[in-house]
Amino acid sequence: MLSHAVSRFIDRQRWLDPLADVLQKVTTAVYRGRLGRSVKSLFNGTWLGHPLHPVLTDIPLGAWTLAIIFDLIYLFGQRSPMARSGAEILIAVGIVAALGAAVTGYTDWGDTVDRERRIGLSHGLLNLIATLLYVISLVLRLTSPGQGIGIVLSWIGYALLITAAYLGGELVFNIGTGVNHHAWQPPPTDWTPAMRASDLVDGKPEMAECNGTPVYLLKRGNVINAISNTCSHAGGPLHEGTIEDNIVVCPWHASRFDLRTGAVRGGPATVSQVRYDARITEGRVEVRRSPASLQPN
Ligand code: FES
Image 1: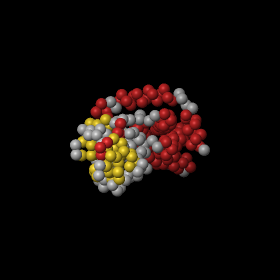
Image 2: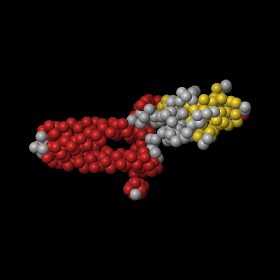
Image 3: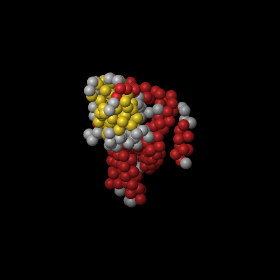
Image 4: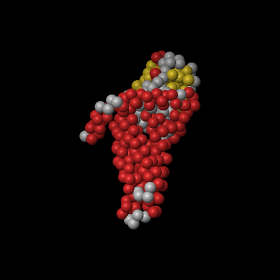
């Protein structure tokens, strides 16, 4: 299968690892501190409730596809100046959007590991080369009398772009990067026993399995906060995270969730945790999915 062949090929490209190490150190350094985290969340798309990167990648794909159509009209239709200008405008629009896609994609990629990191880096490098070809193409189109080399370069760039898009699909659909990691964990909708009430120690987070779904429980005085334990970003175990007032910080990439509502308060996560109602009945802690839950599943 093509996907296996591509994965095996990229897995053999171990020279990518030292480069990935350096590039990830840069993201760590740039997104340090409170301001850095806010900027990172902005680029992750936390404010949107959806990763921002795939929203932006559609723009260059669409613009550069249309540019090819305008090129064909130009080549096979009397060398129309309108078709030439149309292609130039679309290439320029695609370049601007590609820069946004690059920044957001690089930000998301900063939290990847192992194979997804190598595939993500290959995806990014191909897109970078494609964008550079489009920049050179645009300069040639605007400054040289003939369109020939400019058109050829942009078409080569388009082929690289499609290859990169395939790798982006490999990341999401086959590896699960950027996917809501508890989308397939059915939250109990009726009151369901989670654990013995006596085992829930005040101030100490616990993970309980409810019909196979991990639930995070924290008792503070008479209040029990309950949200899904699996971090929506990449599946980190929230009960191993730290607590800051009403926020739990994921131990893997430091996404922040409101313990009372499950709302995501800081990226890289973009999707809130399931919120549960919790009660103590006959010595047992019981939970059920809250009607006020912000999580879509
Ligand atoms: S798994 Fe990435 S922030 Fe939780």
